[in-house]
Length: 357
Ligand SMILES: [Zn+2]
Image 1 (cartoon, protein in one colour):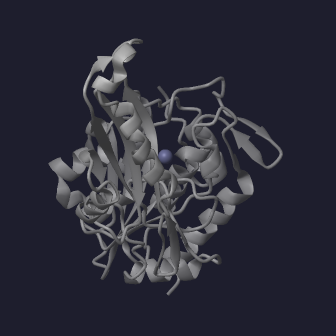
Image 2 (cartoon, protein in one colour):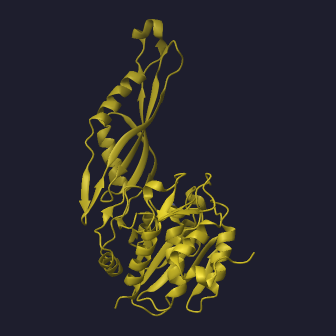
Image 3 (cartoon, protein in one colour):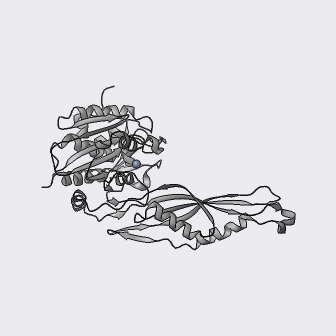
């Protein structure tokens, strides 16, 4: 296959976004796009290029005082009658336009066109972000070649509509169980109804006042919600068992252990089992490259509410921010699109950040 990532395409972030969108790369099918990206990067004299699976990275080695990572995932969610791309006025439509080939285009454009950035830069293009984490290219490289990811700061080019989204909230899944005693429903006074006992669990959730936390000027809004309830034996049996699944989204000033302690406090008197937890990430605004990046963006940062791979960087000790041209509300949407003007503005911001003295 002839590589569609020609020098003319690489020189223009908008054209580059379009061409990247038009290389289909639904998760687990990233080989073609990774091949194209790898071939481009290997041809750039100021970069050293590595590949692991369908994750490709390239780095400058200029001996700068700081190193930053510019990261983007190459995969998309499944197509939904939105392939290939189409353009109407300022809007480019198609699978991955927002999440996140416009962000990948930023990094790839800079990798090729900026031989002497003010920091050493690691450009990181990874596979399988949209599916289970065992396939995630960032996770796989962190295990196999952690030294590839050594850096002082990471910028994840996920869709944020051109503003800086800092850190991310943690998430915890748990099951609160109530128990009772089975009986025939015709003589229910012989039993204890576990579903009725769950009313108190729901009452506590209904009356729960979630915290709002401000960290480094970024607001995080917690939430604790019942997301599933199961119980019942048969139409004529008083049930002896009921489970309420509770999802707790917690601000990054709490560790998963602290979040669990709080959860147990809320459901004191009930059996609580934590089934899954992922830590949040602090805003990460203190690293010097982060401060200089914020100065290059006109708008103040806001807190990221969803969970993103910035938490994976934070777990490696690398402060990270989200910044991308796409609208996060359109990610995974059949009508997914990106504003061409936002691609141009984002590319200018990144260029300014990496070149200002
Ligand atoms: Zn994404």
